[in-house]
Image (tube, rainbow, N blue to C red):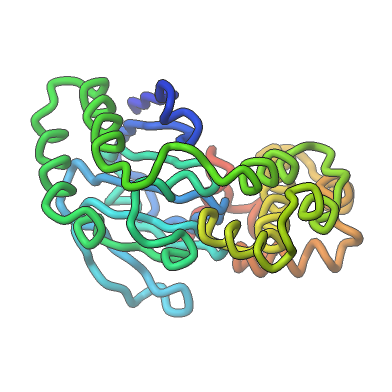
Length: 272
């Protein structure tokens, strides 16, 4: 396996968690369930120019699009084809991080998995072609970093209320309510929800629910005994029933099924 992870330089570091390159042998199973984390992604398949998109309700059905895609902020799991992950590069944005680089507001791309050329035109395919010609993985990542800077459609700074709220919502332990954070932004509740949705792709309430879910699965260590009630309380759930409800809503499975099939990556679960 070969993996390379890069933290971009300013000003991209305010919007991008990482730019990555991944190369690995074919996995012994065909598909994975990917947990949502609310962060948009740009993914480029470097082994073949296609991406398979599966139907959640009927994983045997799906469609094939090209190998350069934009994954909008997700709040439900996706199913991916492991054969399409043999050699990839991508951008993992921070919450709301894709907003400056795409014309539509983030809420219009919520849950989307689109060919990038729908949004970037010929530039998307030209970027992939340059990446295929790159002599090293490092050069691949540089091409992606330069592409982001070239495609900035909005100023590279966030709305102050959104920036403040994201910082507060991601604090651990989270001690303020959404109402308290909203009041400190100086915006009306309605206006705050509007600007937050436009940049992040979901409401503040849904974002905070998703953060709790992510905190819970990050607390689980694969291969070790786990007390899910304790995990739920540490992640901020009121009780076990509340935890199970959200876990199923975001992942489509229960915690035990997640523990049994989780891969080395906390957001990836073997499907078959």
